[in-house]
Image 1: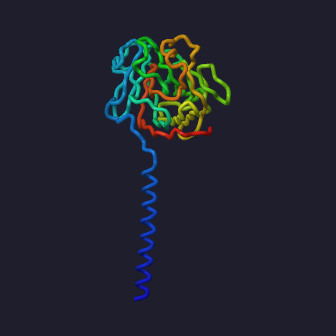
Image 2 (image 1 turned 45 degrees about the vertical axis):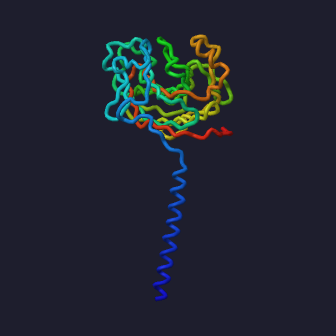
Image 3 (image 1 turned 30 degrees about the horizontal axis):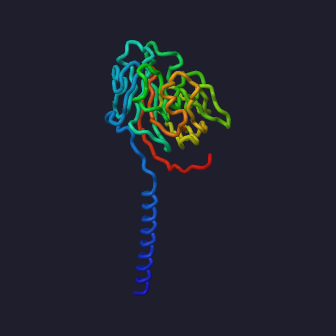
Length: 272
């Protein structure tokens, strides 16, 4: 009887310990910031389209579509590309977050696409509101995480940065040139690649490709000396570039996106 009692109480306290640990774990999980699915895999609900030369919401030649759970940039209905650069914006602006998605290039570039746009796409962030983009404006004022695919031969980094009407600071130096390359590998063919973008307002930004950090920089800011988008820049030139819209680009090469999700981060970062 004594042995049975010891076994009973031992089992009881072990179960109690496991239960408490499980409870603590559940609390920890419940306190974790939650991921938001920006793309539902079924339709373009929550997204806003703007293609150069077309009105807001006009999905010219069905450029943006959903097929097999993917958000696709597709040029199969184009006879020729005439600088009809397009962007599809998520409806809500963000400031501090981690964005994750997977992308791949496929097929051939549409006839008339510029040479530099071969297997070239991008994720714009801190972008101006889509309704403020002018009818014939090529790209929104934004920071761009440039996505590049290999040509089967040469080294070609992805996860670079482009700065349409903006600047950033890399290694304590203000970068005035449009493109800064990352140290990523080259991804040839039509393989899926994961992008993770960690954004902390106007403080710091980190690019990761397949889980590896490939670029970081600080102080995203408007290029108020640029005269191309003067009307909008005049409105924001005294404001920090600390938030804005996320947009996927369409630059003349078929591209697929999937698993697009975002996790908000606290706005209290103090170190780089």
